[in-house]
Length: 530
Image (cartoon, rainbow, N blue to C red; front, side):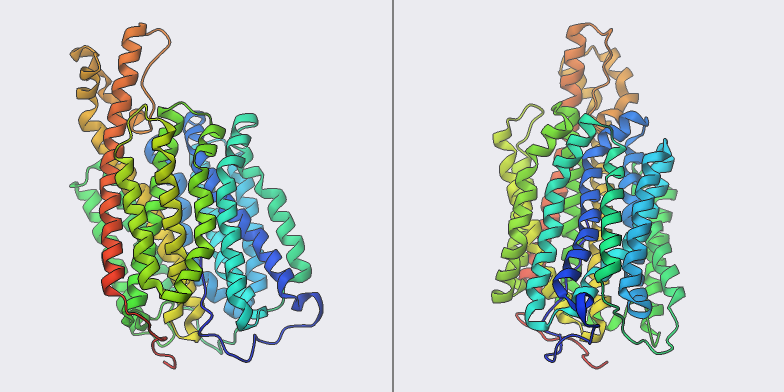
């Protein structure tokens, strides 16, 4: 899922920039147009999460392959979100938004036609590139047509569309996978994308900001992209290479060095891709970090929860989607609630509360077992949804609300980039933790479940499948052995899931403390003129 929020306090009181008269000046038609594209991107993110187990089975993909189905998209989008906003500022937000819509739609169809896990991963990255053009310009277009006094309401409706599409994703994805195939979850973007494009052609206003003759910060784009790819690649490969291996440490170190070089380079540019002066504001810096933690938790937890529900518990995609509805619906409710609470009390209250709710949910999920009832599942789903929605709303105030108006687009891109990086790290780190724990406990759990020691040792090569929640059984196994393997494999997966949840809870507690005690009560934009 992708979200970017904008602040209303830094907007001019004289109204939005002039727009053509007629339908292209109608703010509500503009809202509908961008909502269709936003709906497509967020629906895609949530249906892919529920489609991953079926993609893995059909294309014989490993856990690492499925991570890349998610991470290739997230990395590509995260690397170019800020650039996407700048392209819209310079060449026209309506044009860049529509290019993003067309590219995202075509990439979706290409994924469905690819027929291999390599093709899925490649075109998911292409999807991310075009998503980076689409997402940052949705709110830029709304800002151009809505007057300041109504812009907050427009952003609330924008957030509700994002939340509703996420809520519908598991149901829509489950129905399509169960009654059609996994490819259909990507084909569905074709009619949605066509509707977004046709509607946009007739109603979107021409909107851009003058940037004079400033050159694009091409070097900054390259440095950011290379640094992010190297960092995430090292985290993903840590599972197979080993966390202490030279390849893993070298890739992570290279990514950090390149990103440090990016920060140093940007601080010396007259017109940087990302102005480093923004981070002088403590609330903005903390808000950026907590946003990353928020999506680390959301995407990482949803990834392994879907594996648990479908592969360990044996629920169909539709059944799994229905059971995660409390999470999705709570996010829908929490977005406007969080916005209202943040407007009244500030993010220093809503952000810690949201993080605390997610920490409580992770601790509750530590009580889950391979056969837990649904009564143990829905309360943490509800708490995570409420927490994610509240933090998402609070991040608008803490990031964009603390940036100068002239840097509003960049700040929005920064928020979106932060959440994409957090999501990529969430799936990588948490699934790697699950895999590592499964590998170290599988033999012991199989033995405890009644599998003979010699046979249990032979199942060690199946750790990758067990990390996805799949028990390595076959039809010709004796019934008693089959039951023991299923029980031991399920317990090994739960061990890994519990390790991931401990890390999740610790991060949420750290985010709650940091935002509660580190953020200022109320701050104005930094460097408003500089």
